[in-house]
Length: 173
Image 1 (tube, helix red, strand yellow):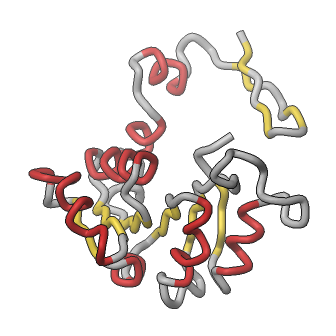
Image 2 (image 1 turned 180 degrees about the horizontal axis):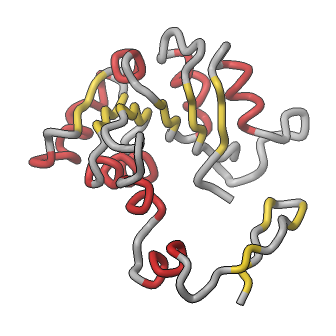
């Protein structure tokens, strides 16, 4: 059987999966992409800065730490205690720091904050020139309306604030 892949406005070529395909077998075992990638050459032990420790950022960070990555949650000083409480006894591969400290030595930075806090969060990162920045924000206002038509892409706006960073949009539809 084939599985359609879509990218919002266009349909991508269909991918045929044989019953013996590694990807199909992984799906049947209930493995997530994070679990699949963890054992691949060059993917173990990445240093990931997750800016924001809420539902999305916290979930991603905990999952990445479970599969062997070093995750530092970057949060403002006022939110450090709740973030430390969230990771609790899972320290080791998890840490909490300011956004700038988390981003400084990271291989990848994941921006996982509510849209109204995104610009301030990017500004708090310091120099991101040449860094990989994965944007998982949704450009919605508090009433869930779309931000505006001038910048239909939140990632475009993030890229304009994160001068010199390699910005990628991920983990949302």
